[in-house]
Amino acid sequence: MNRRTLYAGLGAIAGALGLWTAWGLYVDYTTERVQYDRVAHFDGIELRRYPATIAVTTTASSGNEAFRRLFRYISGTNTLGETVSMTTPVAMTGEQIPMTAPVTSTQVPEGVTMSFYLPADYDYDDAPEPTDPLVSLELVGPRNLAVLEFSGWARSATVDEKEAELLQTLERHGIEPAGEPFFMGYDDPWTPPFMRRNEVAVPVS
Image (tube, rainbow, N blue to C red; front, side):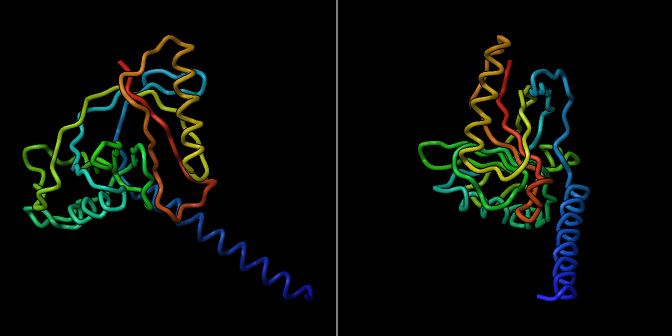
């Protein structure tokens, strides 16, 4: 390989990395996030207070199936035929899903229960109702969460490790969890790992 070819290859890699990074910045800038108040910070843990939030929810045999149902809802499969903007973070436990969204998910005997958060400009009374009988609207919170942030790919083993770290830190400080820990992600699948914002959280009193 001659020097010109090497430089051309390096330039192409640098250009691709720049575009990848720019995409991550664009998605972060244009996606609405669920707002919260920061209450306290200690040992890498943040205590937050979240307001009441509207969620659209379903229970399915897998995360993929649940995600598809909810994505159809925000794509217009609702009583008003409205497209509903996606928000972040993704909050889930159990099975991972292939892309981020305004999601809460818990594992239940019937499968996976998953929720997308609606944008803040929706009220519960005027939010579009789902037309799929397996999808429903609910009002979540207000609630307090203890949160531990980390970056990179949110593999299951990493999430389990961070959840254990979160619970151990709370125990050292005498803080009792008020529920089960879960994962929250803020990025789509194409965001570079060094730009990814991941969190594990647990409700606290």
